Image 1 (cartoon, rainbow, N blue to C red):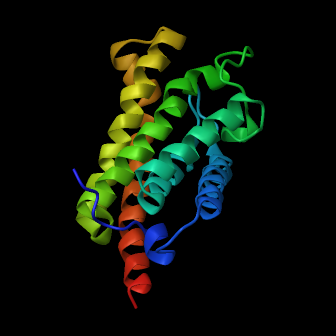
Image 2: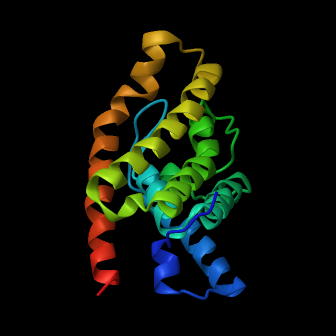
Length: 194
């Protein structure tokens, strides 16, 4: 299966180098880290702009660089850099549930970004509002598919209590982020094509 459509990054720099790829990967990780600091401290999982960053990085960089960028982001936080929500770090924070409750969501980020990047490269979904919505929705499903089972394992929450803690508080925010991305990406493409 051929990935035939350029990403925004490829459109802007048609012949990238390894150095350029490394800059994009580091920049993608830094972008997500910056958005993670915009936080509403809900318990057990905070509400942040982090997932918006994950999905935008996927669309802008394509699946390979997005996978690398989000793997770098997760690894940086695991290594102790304060890049997670609220400046947290470490994957198994021993002070309460903390980062542990978010572990599944964090682990999902490279996969969610890679899926969005793949959809963009294969089907050019980021060029139109509805296509961008579909790509972002697919990435969001991956985030919850990883996040909810791990949240359940860490907190012991099940059924409705699990959904109340790990899904429903985020649905409105995720919808707003999805629409924001769906407005932003096609607009950027219009400027890039001029």
